[in-house]
Amino acid sequence: MLSDILNLLKERGPMSLAEIARHFRSEVTAMEGMLETLERKGRIQRLDTQCSKCKGCIDVTPEDAAIFQCLEKAG
Image (cartoon, rainbow, N blue to C red):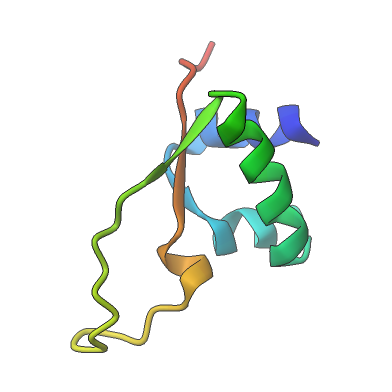
């Protein structure tokens, strides 16, 4: 599953935790653990979204604000 996540991020680019969980039809909490493992191994990184949660534009959930990208090149 970890390699599937890496391949998805390589193909599609940065994605939110919510998008990744939906893609794999997984619970957000289960996906968080896998993404933390990949991040700890230096394979992905969490991007700083700088969301102040002011609700000025939309009500952003934490899983929508958590954006991850692969640090490896596709191919």
